[in-house]
Amino acid sequence: MTFAFDMVRYVFAEGLVGDKVVLDAATGKGYGAYHLAKVGKARRVIGVDLDEEALNYARTMHQVPNGSFEKMDVTCMNFPAASFDAVVSFETLEHISPFRTGRFIEEVVRVLKPDGMFVISTPNRPVYSAISHTRGHINEMDYGELRDLLSAYFADCRFYVQGKNWLEHLEAKGPPGVVARAWAVLMSHLCWLRIPLSHSAIGRWAAERRFERLLDERRVRPALSWGDVRDCLIQLAICRNPRKSCCETT
Image (cartoon, rainbow, N blue to C red):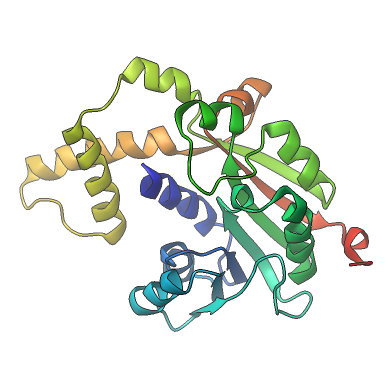
């Protein structure tokens, strides 16, 4: 489930980064940075992370001419001010201590150009915590907390949801069997890698239908109501117009 959700978020972001200089903050193994560089047609993508093992994997498997990977703490980055047109950071906030969360957003504001954008996602605590207790999550937020945090640093924040009405979806669907879970993981990997799933027309049709359902369940949608943000699994935001004044003393 995690990989499929992750890749759908990067597919969502790919349409925002064309010909831009992009930072992928907390890039992990680099598949998202690779996607933004290759499919999103970013001018340049730099992925940063503290995990040396993940970065070595990224440099081996996801290196592209217009991309690079660097070891760096996202709360204290070595880039000059106004270096990036866009900062993308998916599933990062929940791993940062509440005492350092503000510092992270301040760093994002600092390295963004005045007309830059910040694209972020984090689990929606009331829903996510009901179905998963993920190791390393020390700072999950609900919508109100995320809205207040981002609005303090950006004048324009547009919110989106992933896994809309997720608890209802799981109750209706029932617990997946081992074969269903394995198929979902295989489909998400093969479709992202663009590996042919079958040489037969019937096989291709069945695979495409399954992948369409998988994608639709995880699709990123605009948050149109309070119910959308209350009941989603993952909350996202596109933030523009950084409030530089809030970071001038740091």
